[in-house]
Image (cartoon, rainbow, N blue to C red):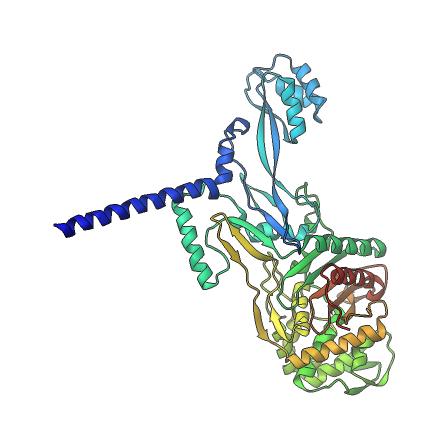
Length: 567
């Protein structure tokens, strides 16, 4: 009898505890998880009742001091409507409104004289001051509704990274960039149910334990790896270079070669994510979605592969004849001149195509293919941005040595810039493949935080090879790039100038070029890798067009991040 009473008492206590926990969870759900939703519900006197409240997660950038900025968020605006049945003087109403808003008088009068209509929209996206001024007019029949709109505070800055939203039927969804890539996270479906709250909590715990990157069907904000101050500075440098040299396209990115975190990414032509889009071609991200023959910045990859395979060494020499014929095709240096007996270092110093051909021959077809596939050119990088293009690397399956020779100096092989940067990071970071990424954290509405860990992939080069090629690239800067050289910092860098194929003739243009420039620093323990490209500038060599933005950005980064000198 006593045992039965004790059991009932235990059950009652457990029931009370369970009810208390459920009440606490419900309060937490309402006051914290769904706080913004219920604030909006409480503001119904400002909201148009027939339309749901627009809501969407934020895309955030974080400065090095920890403060965050919204690259994409929400802003409040107002919708001005009229009930023509209640408007006593349409002409006077339109005249008064025109003192505050930009209105077409004829269109306004047409709307306000529809006496059989009870609802007409007169203006949308009206700011708060103007809405308040209209309210003070006290015109019977006018109604002001609060709106929530997508906001891009920095305008065109990082537009290719952010993307935009547009209508699909009656729904606004992400179309480009992170808006599209993280649509399921950023979108706000109907009010999250209380049951889904628990599902999200336990899904989050499970995913934290398993290392999964996203909580299934959860919603939240994303925090990017982008540093907003660096992003704005980098963009300004690229735009100044384009304005000076008149290229049809320019783009670049700054990445941590050890972790794959992209610190800045920019391309021009760009667009305003919050404006009306008139140039659809500008919406694609050329760093991820475009493939290009990027020229001589491939040469360090070729030399690194040969050094790693042991078929050449830093002190290896070769006879540079100026031109060489393979499989009936003649390959020449950019100036057709012979250098005769030179060390392989001169392949980088003077950007010698015949030297790159020599190294490709020393590697042989099978090893060349194996190394370039190991660099990741036969696969996508996995960057967390949409529409990543597939590299055009069929030459790496050719039986002809000439196809590997041209690939050795970046012609006849077309890759995405993000793919090339991933391969170049191997040279800098000790020989490992990275996964480039632009999101480092997802803040779910449930208050769970999911950290996106940097993924280190397979080892492509030995650590000693990475150090050796970094030393050779530093010599390039110290020997032939006086404008790039810094007294107290080692910089490893290489330029590229590639002829652009003419689609009409199938041949390379004689007067149109693609310029590229990449470098990392400090060379032996790099914090940053910068890549820049420009198509069809009004100059022949990339040292003319891209040195200034590279040098200025390098100095800015070293100062901004207070990187200690290594010399």
